[in-house]
Image (cartoon, rainbow, N blue to C red; front, top):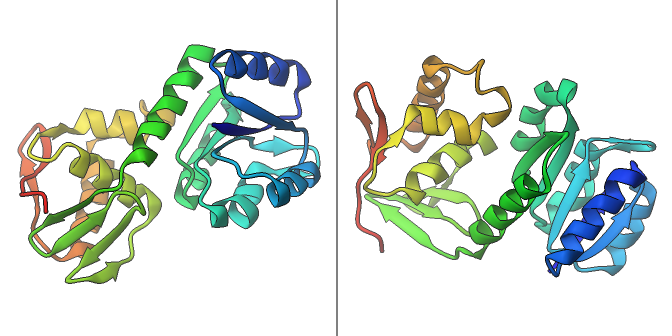
Length: 219
């Protein structure tokens, strides 16, 4: 597996490269946007780890303009005081984020989670709703339903736990980890309301005081 690491802090980068290579990953390291664009033209990248703040640009624009179109799963690296910007990255479609300082164990866990997630090639159907778990696309009566990336992530979590109750606290922990203490039940309620309005099919069951569940057969 080939990982692109875009990080201008060379001390941090060296540590990450060593740890990733110990896990048998091939790592390509760049310090800025300019060099990254050159790499993207010549290399097939399986996963990108992007620092948000770069000397000649930022990770958000790099992802939006150059990496997203290649369908490369990406993790943003961000400083603690940049956490408010993470929602922007996730809405753009990035898979995950991690705040500095972080442990290698934590980063590896996130990489492994992304690898497992992207191995899926399953279309799950519930009534007239189909969720392509590989492409992260939702269809109603075979027509594409436009959902934001955060809405897709919530729906994805429910589909991954088909026939099981997903607690509100679990949704907050897994979707809003970076601001978990600030997000409350009302935020989850608002997003679930939006999802229901868009899919126009009553497949999401509210388990009062606990969370949500989708019951169905898998086709």
